[in-house]
Image 1 (cartoon, rainbow, N blue to C red):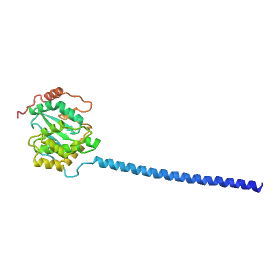
Image 2 (image 1 turned 90 degrees about the vertical axis):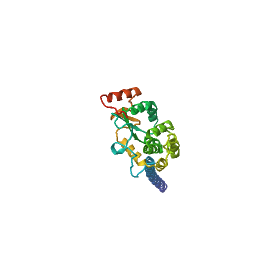
Image 3 (image 1 turned 120 degrees about the vertical axis):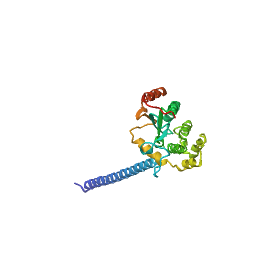
Length: 262
């Protein structure tokens, strides 16, 4: 074997070894980049989760839970409307930003008012904030708090109806503006007192609304409006109802029961 050939083979081996070392170095750098990228991705996901959790708590209150005047039911989470002695109870879970709630309100308001005013039916209204959670914002919370403030003035039903008559588009969080809620109070004679204004501005019942919302989330119902007659769901997802059917259902439920005259 000539020295020349031996030198050539040695050079080839050295080049091959050098290439292998370079390949190992490239693989090491690639693994480092992948690990680094994975860590960054995990951190990004964690940050996103943190942002979502923070957003889900936006506008919530951790203060003491104070119920509005006359609140009824377990934990005092329902606002009563109508006569105490009415033989049937309509339980309503609603969100003032919810378009379906507005549709129910507009379609059934006259019937519900008539049944309540005649003593056949009383209502228990549970105020929730699903749209705040789904779309962001605080309009559901602020409107519900304002309605609870109106309850203290004996004006819940009137202000409740005004809120739905002026419900903004679901995507526009106009009810988040407390000054707008106070402007709407001008439509209810005698409502806009200093006490009402302070209650709205201070979010006096925010914690109560949050508790009502948590109660709804654990109730097994998952949409608003959810309407119960004497504890039985009669209107919700895939449950059509007409005003005439509601009247017939209340009449049947009240058969043989006394109806208060005043």
